[in-house]
Length: 453
Image 1 (cartoon, rainbow, N blue to C red):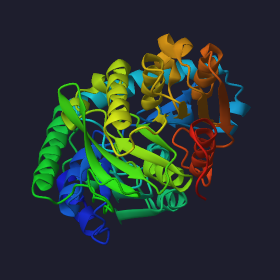
Image 2 (cartoon, helix red, strand yellow):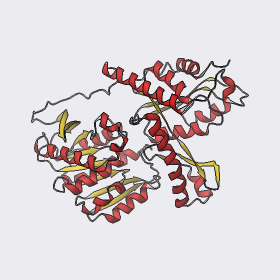
Image 3 (cartoon, rainbow, N blue to C red):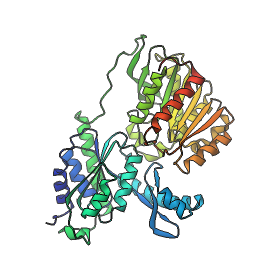
């Protein structure tokens, strides 16, 4: 039986998703037609709503045949076999990606109106569209969500043919579909009203959903849970586990300071765009460093209001200045005062860490970059004195070259470690564990002795 419109389809779909009672849930819709559907799903589940924007990478000589897909923040998923068999050069691949990324970024900026992308790391992600025919775009969205660090991916649509659903069940953790007609020649045939969704409607729905989410947070409903503390500000007894506020410029930066018993160093984390001090990946690495005897400071270098202005996310000089301010505070005023300091940076945060190390070399004893963009710190690389480790995924094509080019400009002690099979966010089994081990070894080597397992 046809749906009245996309809103009706969304409400029916939401009823099939009631079992997802997860407060760490986020709904992401494929624009444009998926957004009205996703809006109803997000409202019913009490979850934030965002768009997941993917662009197919078509072969240069046969654009309809995909060799991969891209998502925001540098995420790229490649079908290595197609690239290899089609003999696509790195220059050809880069040209296709540059064209598609420009369109992707244009759409992201327009649809969100400057709001930051909702972080998918460690979350249950529900991908919503108004229907699926062949499944190519849906598959790309699943792959991109995983590359962004999703812990569980649920693909939810009002209508799709059974064979497509079965194929996608092998890729997503769960596929939910209201109608599965055996004969399906057009998605629109299953709607009474299937008029085109405009860009303006997408913008309005996303803004409305954002206001709703802010309202729930104001009421105490959806902020990330705090970690229990074992210490209080000003208590010199280790171990320490406390929330801190760090003065920088004309504001304070929130952070989480963790000092294990007998900590021999302190590592400050500079996260990438769209992430935060609550990032499960950075928290995982921080816990591993704590186990190796290093203290950690997870902090946000931008306020939510500043992050909503997208250029700030890529203002490496601003991020570096804030990181230096945090390092100065930690070195002089925190309970970690006097400990040697290192920087751990991811993506754009890695560039900020390198610039910070160049600007105030006496504060930085070592730098580790995870999937970093050191090219954004190109003008400062030759000034970095701290021993620097650049960790990059073996399948993070393009970023490998950026890191190797950066290494050639560094005059300090440095190494490049490539983790085979890993992509940009290291979601593959064992990849992030390897990152943590490499980082712990590097900081132990250059900042202090190992004190734990």
